[in-house]
View 1 (tube, one colour):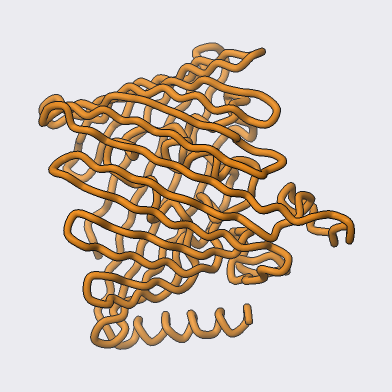
View 2 (cartoon, helix red, strand yellow; view 1 turned 90 degrees about the vertical axis):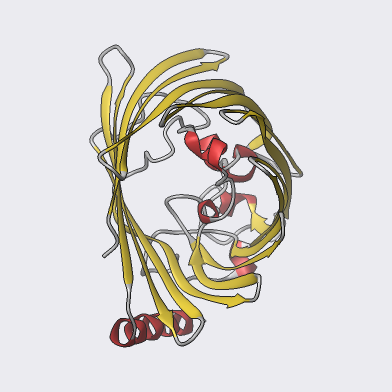
Length: 348
């Protein structure tokens, strides 16, 4: 089945390149990190987005990620990861590769994808650089699901009706960035990897929006979730994780929003059990600032993380984003500063 999926996607890609107009977007993000002592790091992310029509309605979508940094280990041994772009060096990883079919006020995507493309992407939440705002740790921590920078085979459905929207996804339970080998991004093997199912409801009223979702991650052995790809013991039971989340971005004034987040996980042997966060986002002229703090309780420890951020547009389609992170654990404290720059090249 994996080979068949590869062939179909390659054929779709070649056909679209030959027959129809294409669109290419290039996004580059770089940041300097410092712990204000002797530690520093330089992190880079390059993303390419490609789309092309396939016939009268279907569209081929593709996106790749390339990550690089100068320091092997993180500046902070934090549980939530203060930078949502910092990852190991990967020359090339697939974020998206598949076909989207519109159907009236809904659409269906089949192919390679990750959760970050569709979930936890609302404006106030997306401002912050802490990884927990990109995807709640109750869902992602300690489990190899389709979360940046890795992806997996899946199906994603979206429905929009007036101010309401519905999203539903089904993914292979274990993700990868590799294109070849036994464990590759084209792999779909629920028997060994399990299945990840998600459903999210959203409501938007003027400048406020509200989200609630549920996820079921089933069919994985604990040893496999921890990276042991050897065959599990016959006596070992498979886990079934249940995760629920909700968050709101409530407008207080036209230039001020309150952000509230909460999430919990059940029936898991590891990872994050409970998560909650609160913050403010404000606009000052063309700039945007925010302050956010969260608490995450893991199976072995807990962590408070706070962030102060300011986003300043520059160079037309670019921005500068100075950020300060304060991280508190029972036996450690960290103060990290970031200076992030991002730029999107005009569509080609």
